[in-house]
Length: 475
Image 1 (cartoon, rainbow, N blue to C red):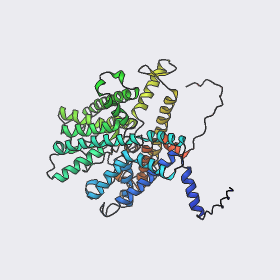
Image 2: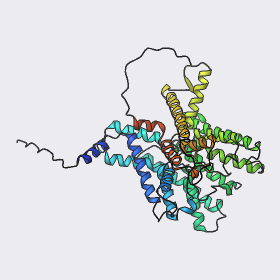
Image 3: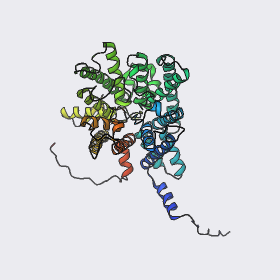
Image 4: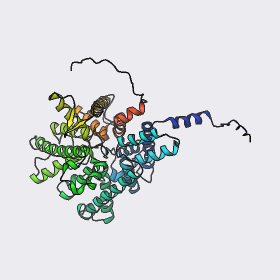
């Protein structure tokens, strides 16, 4: 039986449409992730700009800044969420926070599978690696377990805040929404609040401080760590039973919280007119402990933050904590705690004259150390570029032409945006459109990750098999 040849395919599509389809199919995983994030931000912007979600004072620009801050789980804001967003707008904002903290990778995975159906094994492996590097990580069944555990933790936090934490709110509906919104914001390390003073009104309420701090830490250490702690909960006293990653995350997180609290207590207690100088000792401990937890990842504050209320030493310490950030797989930003630990271990090995990096009797691969150095150097350079960009043109917006911000204020704001923290010294809302655009770009790049962004911009080259001669370089 002879088979008739198939007639030539008549592609009646427009050239621009054919080019768009070809471009879509050729997108790499990092590029697809970047495009998906931008599309979600645009969608959130259009939703927040509608009269159903916001007042007349919220235009497209304000909606764009707020949507970007929510998707990147930052918390910087140029509007008053509690008054300029309607209840529907606050619900949309909470949904954007959840999308940025937990769901963006699921959306990326779904869209890529839908639009790029014919992908090979290598593309699937690249997708999993890229999504894991981005943040929460995990697709399929793993994502479902992440979602279930997140809902359980946020639900428990909401119940405690509703029943005991926000008991000063008489209306039960308002109290329930405040508890749920702040639980979502805290677990996803977003830092958005319904009140203009963040959590200053609860600075002396231990339960609110404790619940919010626990939600921040749980979301910040990452699902990989919480899952291992839960599965090995009966053997937690045996630290050797835990993986090196989990051990480093726990030790670095605890150490940074303690050192940050002691540092803030020292800088602000002995500073002239320090913000905690007139508080009782127990209130001082509450404030510095909470602020140490929140500064690295979340962006809530229980003390007024400005160049006049916090000392320069305290602001510099907070910048350092923000830059280090959360842990890999967590909902926070920064260079990550394990990166900081790897750099410290490499420094120790160099000073001791070792040729390899060893942590807890485990040798760290050179590739990991190089990655830690690359992430840190690229992040420092990007933050410096952001800070320099804020100095271009007129910094302050609106009708204020004589307002100038100090270098420390600019650096603090840029690090807060890049590390997706959200702490503000009262600078963000007073910046010009150019300054706010710099922060938008910084938040987006910080959430994607500097290496993922570079991978999206530059196509990876095949491994060079050619060896080169070695030569000493004096450093």
